Image (cartoon, rainbow, N blue to C red; front, side, top):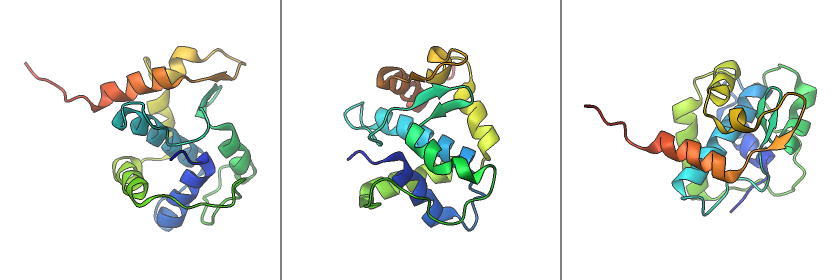
Length: 155
């Protein structure tokens, strides 16, 4: 099931706000990384969100999530943010998935997570052009995160 990006951010807030130093940047990047890994794990058969990410000047962004967060500036967010959809429910399996994302990436701040999404070869880097807001394709996102899931071989 595809969720509104704000629903995903609100899950992280409800579950991890007390110890997660959740800033808008961190929530946006966690949601994006979760989106990419979800595509890879479902072999691009399912999307985590009902919205494509866009390549903006400061990285990959879900526009509706950005709109929900822009008034917070760089503040730590402790309470649920406004959501354009009334139902914030998430399936049990998807909650487990989001908890794994948190376990892997939750200890990092927004700046670090942003740096991960800006590296050479990332979907954002492939489509970003200064001053434009281009959609990041599921194909590029899948390819990048699918590669990240492959076991590393040593010779």
